[in-house]
View (cartoon, rainbow, N blue to C red):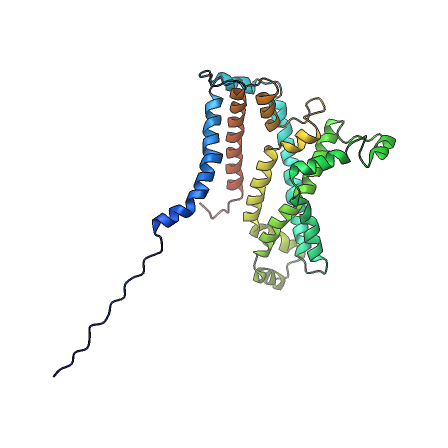
Length: 301
């Protein structure tokens, strides 16, 4: 009698759990968030920008291109753009420069490293509106802690266009420097130590190492932080609305403040405000594309 071996058992391939349905389930909350809080409002703004849409009342019909003409012809349009660009350049240079400087300081292994990181980052935990109210009290010539000093020396923080601008810039730098320090620190820690060791072996000085090693390898971090800083500065609203109300003499009106004023305070026209919003959106898209191209490596297509 011949005994034959049983045929080998074939293993069934395990199927991935859930399949495509599970993937769609994970993506659904984010997709709904984007649709309801970005896509639908964007479509509504686009509709408003081409419609005769007052603040009180519904759509009264097409009003294109009159809304865009009224937006550009507004008496504060070009002044608000000029001021917003000046404010954006100042805050971007200061925040990126100071953020990188603080990151280089706290990167060193010192006994105060943990304390310095915490101290620099604490202001970022405070909301922008709350920080603006805090500085509004500090700058107050009546109730502020420096009221007597301001009165004796004739100093006014918010009473002149230059003072209002730099007082707001100081608030923003105090509030966001620690946040950009954290982003820069992440980029610095992503640079391999072997690169610095090779630079030291080649006899590079600290400045040469920073210029030829650190800065080029921080290109992706610079791209991210620059886009974030420029976008946030171009959309500045809370700090100027609380500190200056656009004054003195409308010298600190940003483009977003102008949109708010046209929609709710001046013309009460959601159509013109929508046209201004579309102009700002297109400007942001163009500026962000330019920034990303500027920080792209030469070998990237």
